[in-house]
Amino acid sequence: MTDLAERRGMNTSVYQPAEDSGLLAQAAVGRVSGRVLEVGTGSGWVAEQLATKTDADVVASDLNPHACRQAADRAASLRADGHRGFEVVRGSLVEPFRDDAFDAVAFNPPYLPEDLEAARDDWMEVALTGGEDGREIIDPFLDTVGRVLKPGGTVFLLVSSFTGYDEVLARAEANGFDHEVVVRESYPYETLTVLALG
Image 1 (cartoon, rainbow, N blue to C red):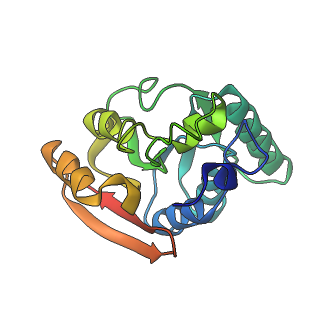
Image 2 (cartoon, rainbow, N blue to C red):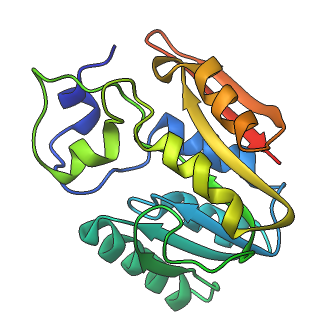
Image 3 (cartoon, helix red, strand yellow):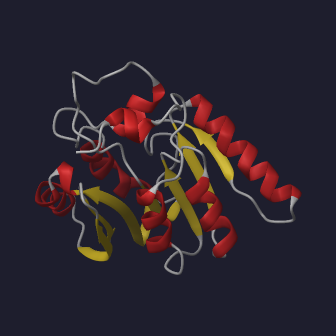
């Protein structure tokens, strides 16, 4: 497993785009339209890709106030350059949003199993770690995301081999989702998969 400090770099406040961000954007661009939510936007990079490369009306959310500020700056910069930009909302998972609000939801969740020896109490830890089994955030997301999806809507969820792929699928199926693998990449330390859940 990659050392958390390595994944974190020197940044302790906002997750910056990495391989997982690129895969999520690759999976969603070309497959989304209408109103789209990116949960856990971090720097807003994926939301920017969706706003500039699709015709979707994009909303980005994050629990981290530093991430919301950085994403809002990115959206403002897009507008200054003549693009539509995207809306930024601070909140936990899909909590701030009304029922049937989105045609698609994209999420690159905190998925690394907790490493108590390397743990630090900062926003980057929140962005990277998903509790003891890596699914502490994924499970409640899967339990609640259906509420904000319009009928026929799709969830794009990034899953790491560290997280327990079969367990994530089982939770998705328990919540009534079918799944399709959109893109999968293997790296020396893990395999990343973006699932389309509908």
